[in-house]
Image 1: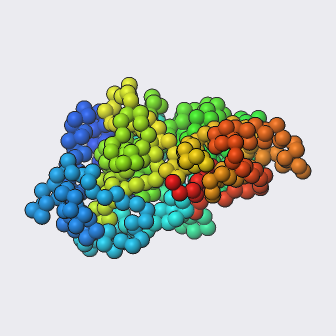
Image 2: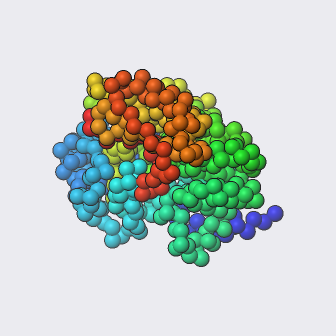
Image 3: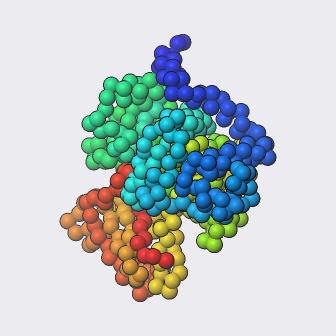
Length: 454
C-alpha cells in the first residue's frame, strides 16, 4: 500500500540535505567494532580542531597554547584534555569570536538554549549539524521500533518548538507529513489532561515522545481516575531526569517500554537507550563525550563525574569541551545488544542539584526526588536550598484541602524526618502547599535546586 505521507516526508527531507543518507550510514556503523568507531571519531575530532584553529578566533590561541594544534596545522589528540573547558557563560562575551570566519559560504541559523537554569544562550548552528542531528534522532526512533512517519504524539513544553499561536501552514503540513500530533504540556489543568488522554486514544500513536515530568503527570492522572489509555509500541522520554519511579509508573499505565534519550538544544541528541534498557549509548558519530572528576581527570566506569561534550559537526560555531551542567557515569559492562557504542550507565543529575549540609558534606538531590516523588498525596514538588541549614519544600497536593497541613500530617512528618536524616537534625525545613510551581523558560521542570555555592 502506498504511503503518501512517507513519500511526501522523504521528499521534503531530501530537500534539507543528505539526512536519509546519514541514517543509512548510521545504521551500518552502529555495528562496527569499537576500534573502528574510535578511529572514525578521532578523524572527525581532528578535522574539527584543525578547522577551529584556522577559522575560529576564540579557539586559535587556546588550541596552540594547549599544544593541541601546531602552527603548521598538526593535531595532537593526546593533548586534547589540556584545552580549557567551555561553559554557558562563555557564549555571551565571546559570541563574535566563537563564529567561524567562513560563515559566508555556509548555510547556518541562529538558535537559543534556555537550559535547565532558564538562562538563555545564543549560538549558531549550521546545516551539517542539523542534518546529522536529525539522522541520529531517526536512528534512536528505530531503536524504539518507530519507523519514519509512524504515528507519533509529542507532549512538549517548549513554546519555541510548539509555536503556539504562530503556527503556519508549513508547520501543520510538516506535522501532517511526519504523522505527528503535538500537545502543549505547559497547560496541565484537569480538563487539559482529560483532553490529552482522549486525543491519544483517538490517534493511537506508535510512539509517544514526551517531556519526562509531563508524561509522568499524565500517567498519574489516568491511573487516579481509572482511565484506559492507548498502549503505543514505545515511549521516548527526554528533556529531564528519568527517575525509576517515573519510568515504573509510565510503563505501568501505558503498558509500553520507555526509552530514555539525552541531549540539549545547544549540542543535539547525545545518547539514547536501546532495546536492552541497560544504559544510554553515546552517538560517537556526532559527539565526543568525556566524564571528568572535579580535578579534571577522566573518571573510571561506575564513577560519577561531570559531562563534557564536543559537537563534531557544527563548524559554524564549534562547541568544544563544553560543560553541559549534568553529571553521569560510564557503564561498567558492555551492552548485550551487540553495538560497540560506549554507554552511559545513567545521567545522575544536574551539577547544582547537590545540597550542602551544615558540615560541608554534599547530598545528592535525587534522594529528595525519590522521597517526595513516591508520596501518594504529592502531585508535584520542588525542593530548594538558598542557604546552608535551610530547605524550602513546595508541594502541590494531589487533592486540595482546606487545611492540607492537618490533613496530610502523617506524610509531612515522614518527609520532614527523612529530610533531617539526610541533611542533619539542625536543618530548618519550611514546607509550603502551593497551587503552581513554575517551569524554566524552556519548559523544563526542576524538582531540586541548590543555590548554595560549594
